[in-house]
Length: 219
Image (cartoon, rainbow, N blue to C red; front, side, top):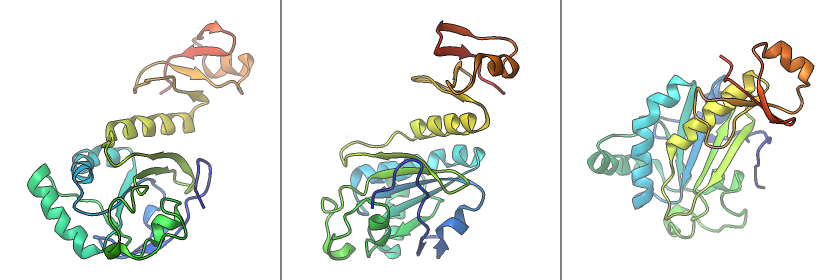
């Protein structure tokens, strides 16, 4: 089963570098970013885990919990963390799920259900599709999915930008345009009539087309 935007994030129990978790309980009332890796000690993923560690305070500031997943056991994760510290200058301070039996990767559609074997019998290329990011809201609904090729490192600033948009648009009846950044103009969603828009945005808006109503970002 492949999970898509709008689906409920499937609950699971797993061992992590921070101890055992029940996923929904661990998320609690926060937002969550789950990002996966095909194997420990892989070069691009090493840089990504370091990049996320450096940005982790920005996610925390937004009420977002971060959790990684890699198709290997906890012992390997902890050894990998030492390499990340040595090469990236920072140690991941968020949990990393041990998925040595492929259970979570299969549950989230990152590997096919018929994928055979366990972590120690599979290479990173065998698990190449375990390169996904899921953003999950406090109701446990999936709000974003992105899957990257193994040769392209993820841009976690882009994930932060999307979270800023998701959190803003969850509070106000607006959408964010291409390349939007925090503080820039937004778009009034089509489901809001002009009459209701005048109440919500009394200072008005610009409309180069009737369906494209541009307004300052609500606070």
